[in-house]
Image (cartoon, rainbow, N blue to C red; front, side, top):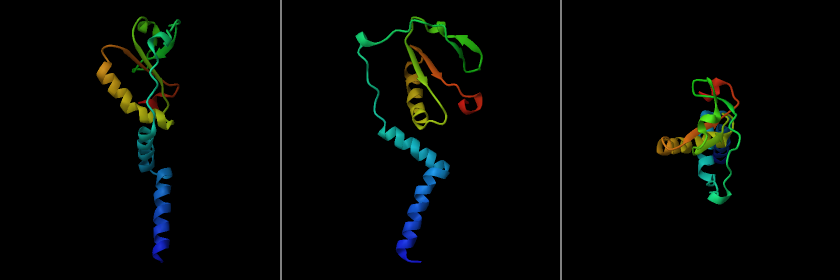
Length: 119
């Protein structure tokens, strides 16, 4: 084979690895982290307040509880899915926030998925 043909095949194999291997998933998450922009910080006077706390949610043990326990506290809420790359990419940052501020605020990661992907 010619040198250029081998090089072309290697490039094709590398590109395909992003679609069909775990290496591709890891690489896409890394690219998502690299190119993601920081969230906009909302000025205190423009921040909204939750008025209805009657949410039925499940805790880490999959038991139902009411969101009312967060009333009057600082709350971090994110909507998460296992198939959405930005959701996977943000987990490291959410864990950092939890490790840093976990005792000062409530954290809620909300999903409508079954238990297996979430665990």
